[in-house]
Image 1 (tube, rainbow, N blue to C red):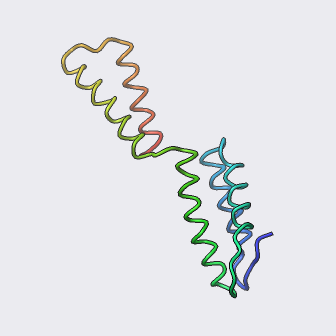
Image 2 (cartoon, rainbow, N blue to C red):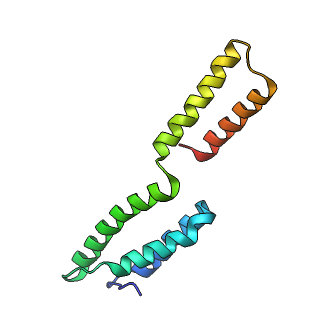
Image 3 (cartoon, rainbow, N blue to C red):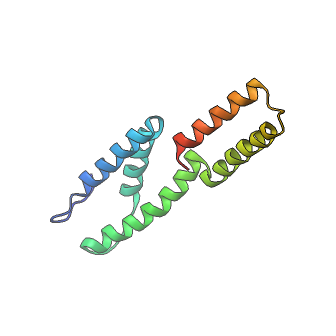
Length: 118
């Protein structure tokens, strides 16, 4: 289990973090919790008290950045590609060359952009 320090409940902190991940991304929530738990236990840091916790958190932060890209991809590139598709469809609409299917695609893309809140 995760070590706790007086006044700091790291087990609860990690559990709350897993719950946040589960609510926002149901399909990846379990993998997230497993990842955090496994990584946390794998870190071997020599030292005392808060130093050990600080070092483990630094390592976890670094590993989470990599995990995030592996699971969700580069969200900046995804957002740029989505925005480009919307702009292309807008340009065709301004020219009057947008058919009903393309208008529906544009609505879907706008809804996706708003839902993802890039």
